[in-house]
Amino acid sequence: MDDYFASDPIRDLDFSTRSVRSGSDRTSFGEHGEAMFLTSSFVFRNAAEAAARFGNQEPGYVYSRFTNPTVRQFERRLASLEEGEACIATASGMSAIMTTALALLKAGDHMVCASAVFGSTYQLFGMLSRFGVRCSFVPLSDLAAWEAAIEPATRLFYVETPSNPLTELADLAGLALISKPRGIHLVVDNCFCTPALQKPLLHGADIVIHSATKYIDGQGRVLGGAIVGQRSFLHDQVLPLMRTTGPSLSAFNAWVLLKGLETLQIRMDQQSANAFEVAQYLVQHRAVARVYYPGLTSHPQHELAKAQQGGFGAVVSFELRGEDDSMLRQRAWSIIDATRLISITGNLGDTKSTITHPASTTHGRLSPQARLDAGIGEGLIRLAVGLESARDICTDLARGLDGMGQ
Image 1 (tube, helix red, strand yellow):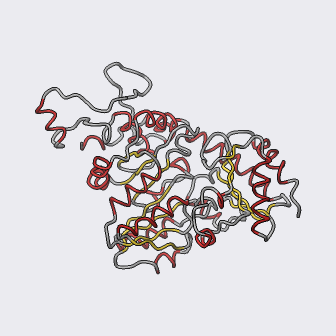
Image 2 (tube, one colour; image 1 turned 180 degrees about the vertical axis):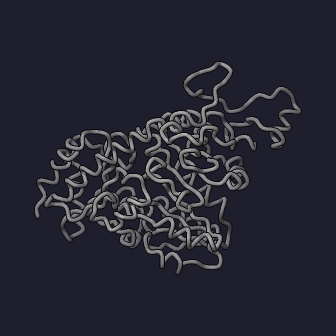
Image 3 (cartoon, rainbow, N blue to C red; image 1 turned 30 degrees about the horizontal axis):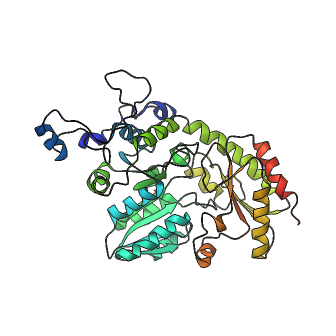
């Protein structure tokens, strides 16, 4: 299936153009919108062709578990937007992480991961110990800690940037300087920014991971994931895993995600602008102790965000004032429960604003020590700002915040 990873012919055009046009393959019917191939298998002209396709001796589609025209169009478009050579789509963001880990690691290997990662990611890497893979967790932004954690068996660095939920940044160029000379793969979760705001491969990353469920879809409709990187890695190491283990993206979901990419830039730009306005409101509120948003000059990595990203994203997290954990949890829940406009859900990346309490939801299955190491306290609230009026979002937050004491 060498042609499955063929380069995009319009790769030199602007990002907004590629968001709409990249990867499209018209059939003989000449359709304008991308076709949806809802089929499990593909028919061959004869037995010899079937044997050649199954044996990778000639190009063509075989079985939708690992080759499908609609999925291919999504993969080609996302690879183009990420400035990657190729992409393989998966059923979810977590399956993209799992598949990448299985492709790169074996028993006896060691990896280093940021302590500030999504709760399920943290748990997945802990599960790898069952298969003889060890993982060390280090502070995301501490380059010296990353270097100190390296062992002779280290094969993989894994980061989210910005992190979930504290929007901490990794210095990708700095991590690449540490990892590349040692042959360590730098894998970056680009979920919060998407290629509309950040292109990790241009900063030295080897592999980019996406939960396409989030901003790539943009409307909370379907699950999906993606792995973007070098063609040789995806063809030789990832595709055989996909073919055998089957964490596949459905053609329907791929079609939805393909259409989501068409509006990615304008959504990310507007949601980032809304988030900045909401963050400024929260900074001034008496009930808020701290706001985490890279667009604020108070963010410790604001300058890195300006240099590494093309925007600041749409996720804003904030801590409430207070010291007693039980009181802080009740305050956080009261503020969340008081909202009437914002959706209470653990998902993010939607055009509708969402709100959650990470310590009891997205990171609730972590141990208290792991949450402490990740900086996730009981008074922390994560807000993913959507496309509603920023003023209306602030008014909704005020329903609960204005009732809090000093």
